[in-house]
Image (cartoon, rainbow, N blue to C red):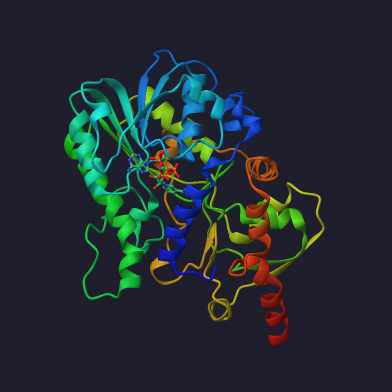
Length: 389
Ligand SMILES: NC(=O)c1ccc[n+]([C@@H]2O[C@H](COP(=O)([O-])OP(=O)(O)OC[C@H]3O[C@@H](n4cnc5c(N)ncnc54)[C@H](OP(=O)(O)O)[C@@H]3O)[C@@H](O)[C@H]2O)c1
């Protein structure tokens, strides 16, 4: 919580990669114990062949679980480095193509699929090249974008037609430039997908912060872990500071249904269903546990800044360029079938996964005592807040 937004985005990517080799016995057999999958477990009327660019990290395995339960067949395309940490048993029935989006798309040549899901887009050129290569051989291109395309988040009800920043502005320092670069990359990648496939064959999905079993970022997971421990819990921000998040399984199931229904277009992907403030989120999440807790609300942004507490996802200090980061309009997604797992259920599933063999003891320990992380700094911040009177 002491990082800048840029460090925070890049560190979460590093952590995601490092954690991906861990097992997850409860889900490794391919059995589904997930609400997100159970809700969509009926078989689809028309089985699809789906290529996932990526597919072995966080979102991919959940998409695969949902798609297979509905009768679809899956190919993945990766460098073969990242091992899935969840739903590992399902990968026996996945065609695993190997290459590199940087310079080796050979494995995709001459092949046909009904749909491609581009999960691993990290460069505009990657999406441009794969979309151009596949435009004649695949019906639908689904690009996994991000609400990051709306940075700077200046609106109070950010809809899909909001004009996007397509170039990092000049005259700003390196740190500020880093804040723009992810959204600018995603926005231009969306355009490349659309240029190749056309508006009636392109599906753009812009998720907010994702959470759920298998999350390698340890961002949202902070809250289930912290609330389970009980005691004096620091809650940063004002009671009504808006928060948004989405259970990865809800996202995965909905993306597969969009493909089945051939629903082209651009969609925000955020929850929960109703506008929610930070306090309502914390109380609702704590309802999943028996721990005795008292909540120390610190609504003073200046004090939080002094203590370098700018975010505790899903809370992001809603000021400046982040004022609207949790004010993403979800009407279009909802009317296209996005549904939500109840918060307490998501929280329980996350904590069960966190204490499974999928997560190493070192990683669990780091969440609690990692020097720069909030849990280790929390007591000192609370003391300073109380002393301030
Ligand atoms: N997590 C969130 O809160 C959040 C929020 C909004 C949007 N998103 C978006 O959601 C998408 C999915 O995220 P994710 O965490 O599941 O996956 P990810 O980290 O974006 O992608 C990892 C996958 O890409 C493959 N890959 C990486 N480099 C490659 C290369 N050069 N060539 C071919 N394959 C490569 C990896 O396998 P190998 O290592 O084996 O190659 C792995 O399967 C991302 O586009 C992300 O931006 C995430």
